[in-house]
Image 1 (cartoon, rainbow, N blue to C red):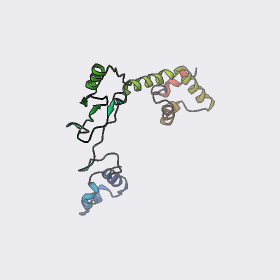
Image 2: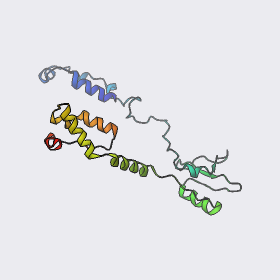
Image 3: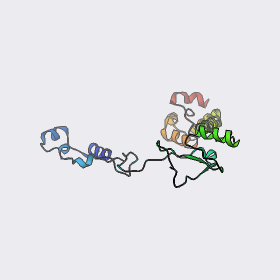
Image 4: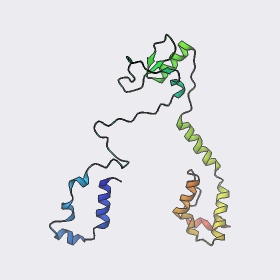
Amino acid sequence: MCRRLRNYTYYTTCCTTTMAESFSDSSSELSELDSDQFSICSDDSPISTPSIGAQTKRRKLRATSTWSYSRLHKSDEPERNHQKRKIFYCKFDGCSFANAITTNIHAHLKVKHGIIVAEEESRNKDQKAAEKALKEAIDLPTVREALAELIVTRNLLYEAVTWLELHSLLKSVNYMADNVLLKTSITVPRLIK
């Protein structure tokens, strides 16, 4: 957690003085706070600012099938272009093609070497397909019937359908199960019939 947030949380939860006492005291808690308590978040926190001289995060190489046709750069060749993108060097003998743009690399491989590269599906498409499959896997009538049976056999309150713990349990099994449980206890009698 960020140091500033820890200090704020400590100050708001632990200070027991009343407002009148803190106004009457000339050396209040706020004036005694040291400026280093409000410094930039520590390195162990997920929110941090990059320090000077820190290495920048590199993109993951995604077009692996395209890059399988590349060779390592020679000692007199740059590894990256002026935009810090990795340069593709064609691995075929007698070919001096070098570029960092995947579309240009595909065109070169197709025209000069007769190779048509079929790239992997994008992650967004895979993610959407997985989410669609998870939504389709939910059998709403069966879930509602099981919920009604649970309420009746365990003699639970109707408002059990609004319990955050129950919602969390279902979402841990299938994170696409947003609208499976009822939002209000009013509809439970209809569910039990």
